[in-house]
Amino acid sequence: MNRKYFEDENYEAIKDAFEFLGLDFSKKIYIFIDEIQFVKNLPSVIKYLKDKYKVKFFLTGSASFYLKNLFSESLSGRKYIFNIYPLTFKEFIKFKGYKVVKNLSKNLDPILGKLFTDYINFGGFPGVALKDSCKEKQKKLQDIFSSYFEMEVEKLKDFTKLSKVRDTLLLLLSRSGSLLDISKLSQELGITRITLKEYIDFFEKTFFFALVKPFSQSKDVEIRKRPKIYPVDVGLAKEFGINDSGKLFEIAVYQNFKVKNAVNYYRKKNGLEIDFILNKKDAIEVKTFANTSDIHRVKKLVSKLKGIKNYKIVCLKKSPLKNTLWAPYFCLK
Image (tube, helix red, strand yellow):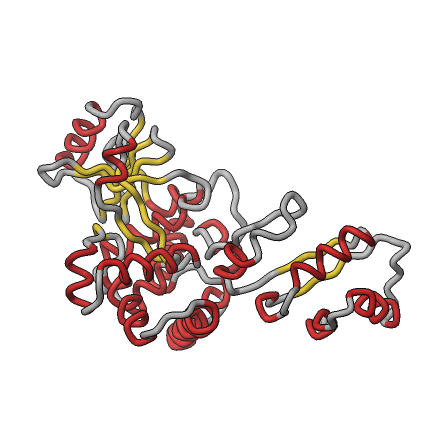
């Protein structure tokens, strides 16, 4: 539907225009609008047509800050919001034309391994997954980054120093999966801690980054300790900041369970840690390859955590050890 039809200040005139185009308001009407952040006063128009004529709307937009913050106060109790994230590995292989079944033959392991490597290197944006060559995938990732900066940062938030915002984005991408040190980062960027926190809050609200808080039975401790920061997509981390294969693997695994799970990490004062705690009951350690000492270390840490009974070590390379799971299998569960 052409967005310009909604720009008329007379809402009945908008309804008349739709009737001229052939819509019958005495019947059920469904209207689909894309990029709704570019339509002024859209919430008011939708509320009017929905309340008076029972019109149902399906609205999409790439500017998540608008959808989450500027659009959220309208239509209270009248709307459902769906957040669409980059593809999980299961969705990724479907995009590649493969069918996911319960019992996969071991003969398919080489194909799964190759697909997972592709997923680690280029991520799960649908537009990237459907490209054939590495250059096309990289170009699409660059376009996604540029679009985010233009659509979200420049148009929807009144930042005074856009170059500093961009520097912050790139620096945080290079620190993906690491503890967030506000003091150190603000010094490196030459901005105040308050400004940096404002940037990060915006990045989080626009789904570019997510903060993973530490696991604790005490809310006070959880709030006090530093979070880890993860990007929305491992492909962006690879393209703009990280070359370490182990860290990219960790981000790719996180990308698969963040959508449906509450995620924390666990870290002791001596530095020993477990990468992820899912739903405050399952411990997940991510290793390129697991050995016996890794099993003992995780088991010992888990034994001292109240409520945590299950643990798995997710491996990039297959391991015959108990409580280990090959990453492609884990991500297909």
